[in-house]
Image (tube, rainbow, N blue to C red; front, side, top):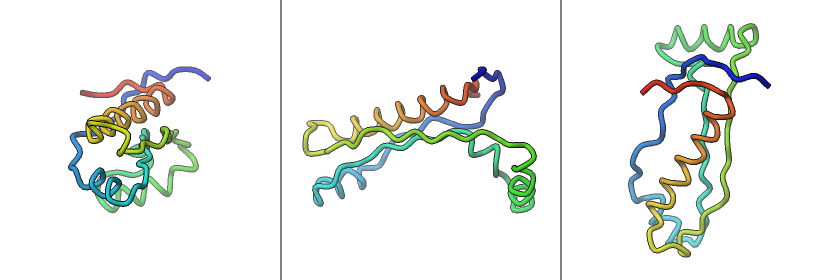
Length: 105
C-alpha cells in the first residue's frame, strides 16, 4: 500500500466539553474514542457539492479510514477528560497515518 502525498482538510479533534465524561461517570459506561479521516473527500461544501460528491464517489473511489480505539473507563482515571482528548487525538492520528495524507494546518 503506497503512501499518498495528497493533502487533507481533515483537522485534529479540538477541546472537548465535559458532558461525555459526566455521562460516562454517572452511567458507568466506558467511552470509545473514534477517529476518522478522508470523509471530506466524499462529501463537503454546499448541498449541490455534497450530492455531486456522493454521485461521483464510486468513480473517484476516495479513501476514508475510521480508527476505533480501546474503550476508556472514565472512573479509572484521575483526569478522564484529558485522557479522552488524548485518546481521540491518537485515534484521529492513526486514521490520518493510515490514509497517508498530509494534513493542512
